Image (cartoon, rainbow, N blue to C red; front, side):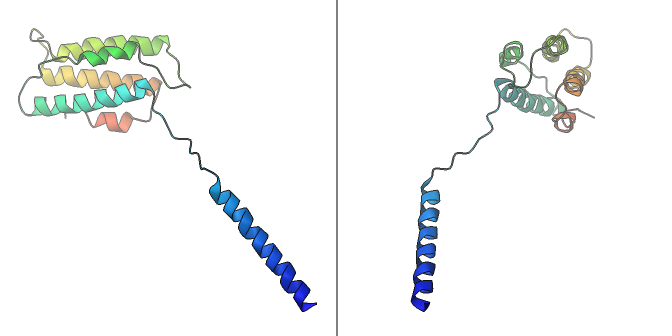
Length: 142
């Protein structure tokens, strides 16, 4: 009887090990987040505006409008988002406002032009994608 129990325990233990080996051999597949074109563009815009802020704070004037910002009109959105009139309106205003930062002929103070642009970002994000608002607020020049 003891031998039967020992053999039965060994068989169960051995089969459990085989099952664990089979599961360990399976390849794990992770569902990795892939940012959309628009998300990557927004990150690029953030970084560039951070540099513009530093230039303005150092007393200099930014020189070149980043042409990549024009991709805001065509960049692919996340799968759960779609372009709508609100987004289109804000994106056109943003581009025009960003261009004003680099304008030599504007009578509006450079800091104000820059903050107006960042405030447009905040206004749009209050209607569409609220997550980055705290980060965007850090771009404002006090």
